[in-house]
Image (tube, rainbow, N blue to C red; front, side, top):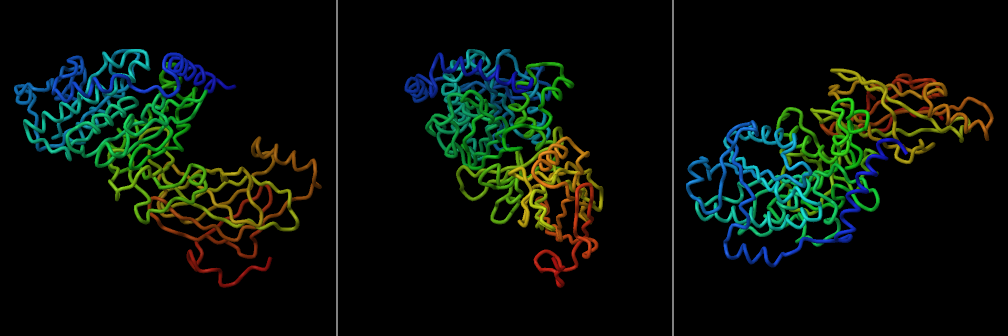
Length: 496
């Protein structure tokens, strides 16, 4: 077991022990009827829940506090009912203090929407408890937010359509409760890796769900399960549910990567969960470098590159720039990202038919591709087929991701790794030599078809020399744009 898996296992084990020993697998918030009765009586539930309306990008500077029922606060804080109103809701905390991500998110929101009412919901006193206790406070906090919104509607005729609730981890479910119990329909709720423990698999009314706002979008960045529990919720719970990198291992979150930057072990544990916030911040700050996600039934199909269609609203921006689509529920979307900001990259679907020449039945090639573009070229990129093995006499479909915009694709170089090029290649050649003669395997690739996800352009690349389409270990072949385009078959077939 490597260090990363070990530390993650320890962390999840601690959380799971707390959850299951105290409340059981599917524990749910307590005292729902009591909290609802308080709301119906229009009472402020708890003055420990604070609404800090930001006037400065610096969270260390005191903001202006809104209080339900106190009209003078509205004037003092210069609350503008005609502008957007954005509530930012934190999750469970062990420190009792706002974490660094909150500073970055507030700053990014205020810079992007400089006329908006940006309100930080501070429920630190309730969230800095054992996790199950913090979970049991989410309903009460959500009801308090709903009470605040109801009062703003009464006093200022606040249009709920202009209200956007952004919740991280437990805060996402708090936002869901607020949306459920407010009088009317909130315009949008964004869930940033909503918490999984004690919410996975429960009824919709006990977690964030598509009915809680006119538009509910969710980013899932830590759905990897250990000991039967996932830090972020795995199931789709919004109108659109976006799973960057499959919602699993996030680039840049490996143990060595994080420790080299911060030297703090806790940052290793938080990296993937918190990545949802940083992706959202990135979407606010990098309008010219937006990330696209693509509708797909699951991560395995996406990794094959067969889900890069934008037809009929099958693709969308992520984060703040996500667009409301026609009413759908639980639409799963996927993308790959870079390890750091700007997180957006470029997706290519590639298809190539690999012919088995001269009885090379045991050939198990490792291919790389190098893309040559109008702006830049890539390094050699591994052809990562989903089942781990290139199919012979079959059309192989795979996804290629580049971190930089290389411009229009001009040509492709296909490389078959030799046995000394990598440990993987050496091992494959060693295994194949045990049951086959040591003859040089020969395969053939005539053309490679490409679809660019971000531009939706399609290209077909043919072997530069159609009389030389064979390839063996340690060799490479160059493919240039076919004169007959994407759909038309070659005018002259090469005899096989």
